[in-house]
Length: 132
Image (cartoon, rainbow, N blue to C red):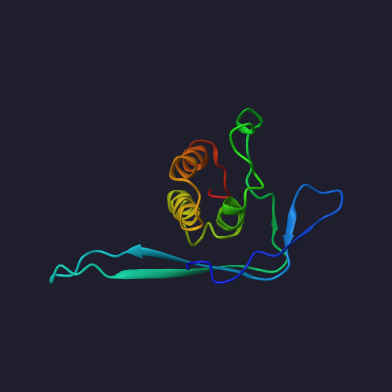
């Protein structure tokens, strides 16, 4: 399983964000360019969301809230990783990579493919990060 830890959060009173209270570890696997032999190795990147990181979980626009539950168990861990990539890891990942990691993590967590696709499209179109 690509997630190597459980998500543990604490709600910040009077705040709309949640605080990570134990590191969240996610290993993203991706294919590398094929070797001359035709073998295509898989590489991985470990993403560690640190203690104290604040996330709003899945940011769902008001119009879509009837379709998407922002508290759905299969979207929580991917949402925290995605928030972290957008805010603190822009030196390491492009927006396109961050969005793809989000999509892959949603599927790995068991999110239905149509919902994962919808959430992926939403962040592709409306996601804003700290890229300059």
